[in-house]
Image (tube, rainbow, N blue to C red; front, side):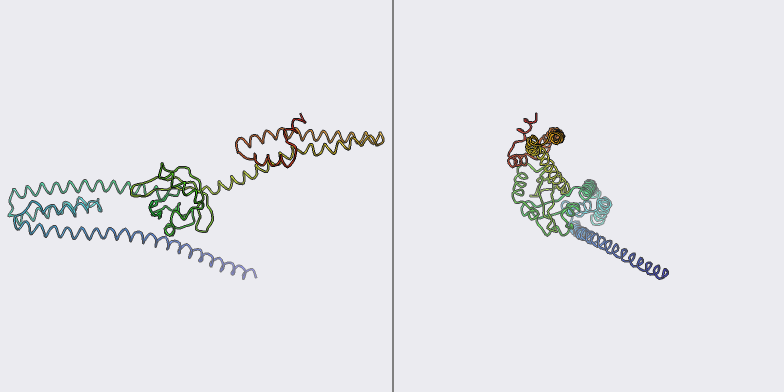
Length: 365
């Protein structure tokens, strides 16, 4: 039986391992698919510009061959700037090489079609130098732009605060980082199906948010958002307007903090009520105790002395409770001062008790 159990557990363990591996393979496949889609989009954009570069280069060569064959050298060389600038911007590391290639082709065309005229070659050389200089400037600016974009893209994607870019006109969500989507239970793709306005729970808070945003920007704005699961999440927002009718919004999840504050408030309110009960407990006990002491005169002397002794002991215990109430009153004042909790409950307790604690306190003193 032990061998059979061991064999069964071994088979079950292998099945669990295979299932776990299969799940991770699926996750990896989904991540790879999303990355592949993003890369495919970027490659399609770059591919379009590559097609434009090839066609504008061929067009510039053909137009210059035609114009040089007619002896015109003033205007048409400017057509080469179009593919050179586009290449330097989209392929900054290859922009200079492409510019040298285009200028070499242009100088060869002048030499062949213009009969190697020195003035034409010198003019073409100056134009080629300008073309290479423009390519160098555009390539440098494009490289710096790519580095800045990569830096801020890394900050955007890896920030612990949720960050989103919102269209201020129709309130559509243009782009968010992973943290923004995960706070609300969405993926970065699914969150585009809802508008920024639909996330709000309180319409009045939403209107106040946009009023502040338009006027001076928003900072430390607490509100509630509706998650994908219809769960309410407390968030802390900050936002500012951007050009082109856009605004950026950062979001921090403070749901746990709000829940802790609510639990803390409930506990402090209970402490406040307990303190008030101490305030009236002494009178509630002393009143029947005074009746008992008064009735001792009707008892035998030895029994009366024992009852009076126990009554004094009870009174001593109540006095200790009163001392504790005095100390607790200090605690209550601290709660009121630093937490702003208990004022309403205190008044309700006082009205329900019928005797103000301050009056009880003065009596005790």
